[in-house]
Length: 126
Figure: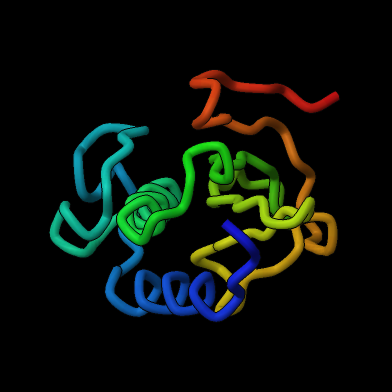
């Protein structure tokens, strides 16, 4: 699927607006639980936002090979999860901390690993 920034922005904004950030310990009473935030009462943490965006894009016809889950460290040193979409050779990040999709290399994150949906495996960055 070719780059459609308008669609990526719409999905990012819709999920960010619909979901209330809620840590896993508060919501699930466990330290780390991954769930689609929209299917889990419109509340969740970063990976829950990423899963909701992933499912929305798949429903819109985006290919699994274009989508990956990215794990990184943010400016504060906290671990963070985002959805990364590859289009026309560029990776775009859909992030609950950002209103607009951003090219991954322009964000001030230290990238750790990606889950490649098309390959069903994690790839650690060096």
